[in-house]
Length: 315
Image (cartoon, rainbow, N blue to C red):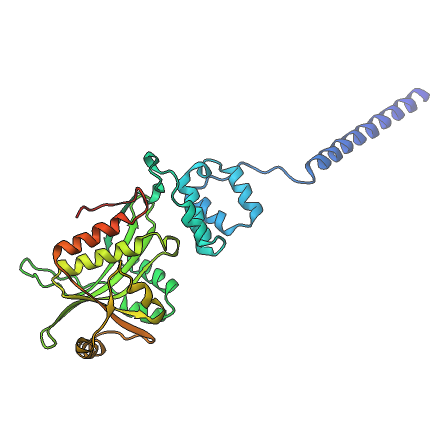
C-alpha cells in the first residue's frame, strides 16, 4: 500500500512540475515577443502597388514597407515618383521637388530616368479622354465636370486622301515614354470661317501636371502648339486666359499679347457665336510668324527643358 501511495505522489509532483515548466516557457515567450504573434512572409507587390500603399500609409507603415521591400527604394526613378506623389498630396513643397528632380539618370546626365524622353500623344481613345478630364478638373475651377465632358470629346474620325484643310477639335498629351506619367496636356480647336475671313487655332485648355510646373514643360508644349498652328496654315493662336493667368501668357518666352481694337471686334463677335465663353477671362493672341522663327521658338523651348530630357521627335 505504501509503495503505491509513494508512486502516486511522485507522479503528481512530476505532472505539476511539467505544467509549471510549460507555463514558464509560455510566459517567457510572451514577455520577449511583447505579446505579438509571428507574421507570415510579406505578400509580393509590384512597385506601383508599393507606391500606392506607401503614399496612403502613415509614417510607421511607410518605414515598414521600406524594410519589407528594399529593392524599389534603391531606384532613383521610384524615389522620384514618391516625391511627385507627395507634392500632389500637399505633403511636400513643390520647390523641394524642383530641387531634387535633377538626380542622376542614365549616363549620369542629371535627368530623372523616367523623364529622359517625352512623346506627344494624339488622343484617340475614351480612356485618354478620362485622363484629360481628370487633369483639367484638378487644375481648373471652371467649368464643372458635366461641361468638361461636353467640351472634351473625341475628334470625329474623318479623313480622305484629298483633304488638306484641317478643322475641328484635337487633344494632345505630353507623356513620359519610360513610366507613362502625364507631364502636360492641351485641347485646341482649329477654326476656319470664310464669312469672317479667319483661320486660327483656339487653345481651349492647357496645363502641365503640378509636379512639373516651373521646369520648362509648359513653354515646350506651347511651342509645339504654335508649331502646329504653322503646319495647319493658321494665321494666329487664340487663348481665353483667366485674369490671373494673363501675366504668364504675355511673357516674352510665350509671345501672346492683347488684341488691338481693330481686330478685337471681329474676333470677339466670332468667338461669342462659335466658342465656349468663360467668365473673368481675357482674349490673347499669338500671331504666326515665318517658318524659321517658329522653328527657333521650338528649339529655344527644347533647350529650356531639364538637362538630359529629350523629345522623341526631331524638328
